[in-house]
Image 1: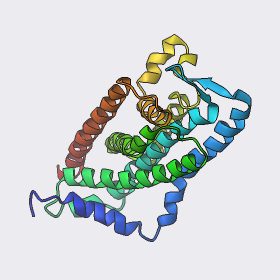
Image 2: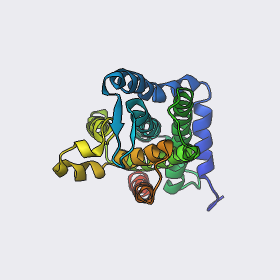
Image 3: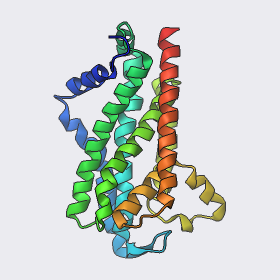
Image 4: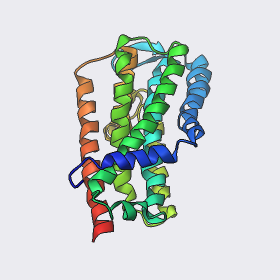
Length: 256
């Protein structure tokens, strides 16, 4: 069994564990949907149209909807690779048991990230259907929105897992909130990048969620250009870096 794809069994364990808790999947997309209704539609009645950074003029709800889709993918990834991963690592000692088999830290990282992609993908798919029914999808490029959501989830899952390996108590999750909340609010989710002071625009562009929003907004609005490729490469790089870092940290924590 050594060298075999043992990450499949890590993934299967998560699937079996959640088969009777399907209702938990409702939590990840409810918040973005509420934001869409309260801000996109409610505030949209006052704001009306918004000019995107590419020059498109769209209703405010259409501007916000792609950002909420990206947030759904992020929520699904973060939920499993931070809080749930920390519990299994520090308290349930799940991974100590797994590493007693031929499985390696790399298998744990891949299996957990793939599970988070399933969860985040379900969140994103449900939110996408809501946006489609409400008329917020206006381009055939939107068929790539769900694959893009999986990439977004992979990036946040890998980096989130890596960061979680450095945590020693539940209090440390305040740092997760400290990072996620400002990123959610200021990654060009509710306002175009152009409204920020020039000195802060570079900071916004460093946020992973900003690149996620750029991709989803471009696909749902049909504003597709070579600029999206840069955002895709950023998320791919974050995925690879987080996966590498998480597997190394798991090895150091549990095998040394």
